[in-house]
Structures are given as C-alpha cells and as structure tokens.
Image 1 (cartoon, rainbow, N blue to C red):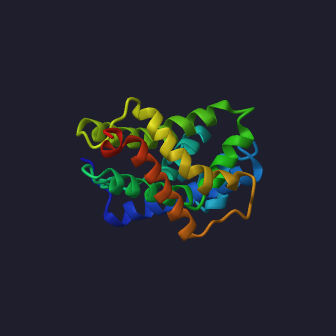
Image 2: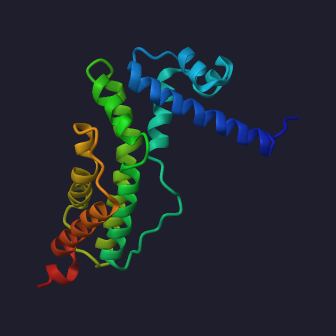
Image 3: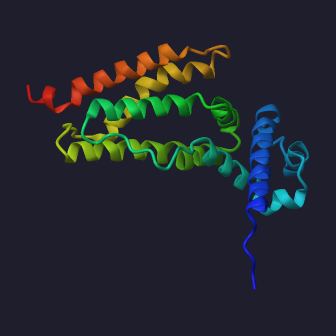
Length: 209
C-alpha cells in the first residue's frame, strides 16, 4: 500500500527543488556548465546529494528543468480572441514580464557562453523554452486568422515579427549592456507600438482597405 505525500512534504519538496534550481543557475553562470558539478549544486542549495539526485539524476536533466521553469507562464492565460489589439497587448505585456523575469538573462548567457562545447544546451533551451512559448503565440494568431479578426498568410512569420519587435528593445541589449534596464513606461510603449504595427499590417479593417 502506498501513501500519497502530505501537503507539508510536497511543499518541502517544492522548496528544495526551487533552491536547487536557483543554486544551479547561479553556479552555471559563475563557473560555467562544465565547471559545475551536481555535488557543488547540492552544497550551494543546502540539500543532500541524495535529495538532488532523486529529482535530477544528471546535470542535463537539471539544466532542462531550469529552462522549463524559466519559460513557464500561467496555464490559465487566455488572451481575448475577438479583438486583435487587446489580445496582442495582453500577449506583449506577458512577454515583457517573462523576458524581465529574474534569471532569464543569466540563462541566455549560460547557453551562449557554453554553446561551442555543449551544443545540447542550445537545443534544450530552444526546444523546451523558446519554441513552446513561440508556438503558443502562433496558435493565437491562427485562431485570429480562422475567426476573420486578422488576415495572415504566415502566422509563424507574424509571431516572429511581433515577439522580435518587443525582445529587440526589452531583452537583447541586456546581453551586451549589463546596466540595460528600461523603465516600465518605456517597455509598455514598445508593446503598444508593436501591437499597432501588427494591427496595421494584419488587422482585417486595414487589409480590406
């Protein structure tokens, strides 16, 4: 007979998992992927090696978990489907919140720094982080297209354009400029302008003119 873990034990396990991921991210950034061992992660996270190995048997599994956690967004997010401007504005604001989340820039720096020696890190980041998020935006545009709210021949390209307009200001300068930190008003303005560009290009009222 098996017993389900109590609420307390689940909470403790979640806290330890969060501590492990935080410690691993910090060590990967400071010492590099190759220079970080699971033993060092366990020590930094103040958990036993057995606890760490139970959740993450390999360093690759730990990195995959970091990527997945970094790109995780709320499951109940439902942007409006009948109003292109409102829907894209909601998506754009959520994207800004994601890109400015603590640790996101650090994660990208780890991947970029270690990519020549560990190309699998880039693949993990792309397949488990960026692409699932990108696909959620593409699917939203597919719905708008199907409902006649927008006219899009290539929703993959349109999603790339929209997210790129935002990330090119909000995020990518952080890779070169350590003090890049635009204020909330500036980032909101970038989202609003990106939405207007998308609406002008793909909105039904504009394409029908």
